[in-house]
Length: 213
Image (cartoon, rainbow, N blue to C red; front, side):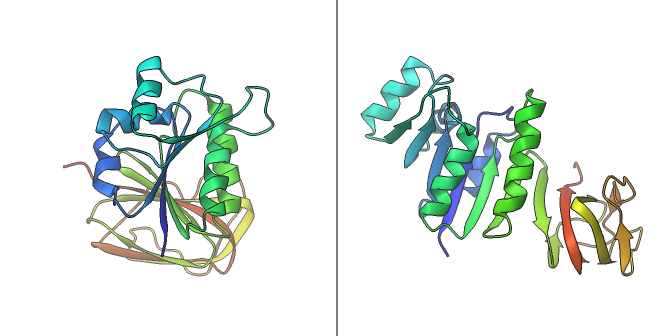
């Protein structure tokens, strides 16, 4: 399975998370200023995509030195740099994507990207990784691996989600309905090192937050 890593230019609480996930066999794509984080980690991307308004001169020189492919777009484009980077990964037949740097100060960008990624998740397997949090988009089932005490939130997207059944979570759900806009699924807790969530209808955004040591 071809894996892709997308680095966006949001706030980074844990750059080491990228290094831990990085696999030399993966396709590494930076959305504009995400290349700054790649340079900090000395991870050479396969390509950088965007309008290049968030990249320093030094990083551009570093990219040119390593002969990184750069796709430059006009600032007056119809899509965000992040969407362009993800579309390129899908075009390159990546079946699994890990997204870094999504969270940031621009609530409009962050929310638009989350909604866009919820559509992409119906075509490829993907996760958003930010510090001690991993976000998944679930339409059938997911098996989580973590630690007793980890927080798990279930947030319905695209309308009501129904037939939700959980195991090894403190607040159990059995073929339950989570209405769109409901906060009922926030801050559940793992009671084991593994947990499972099943969804019969709809889509649920699952946020797995690792217990701080």
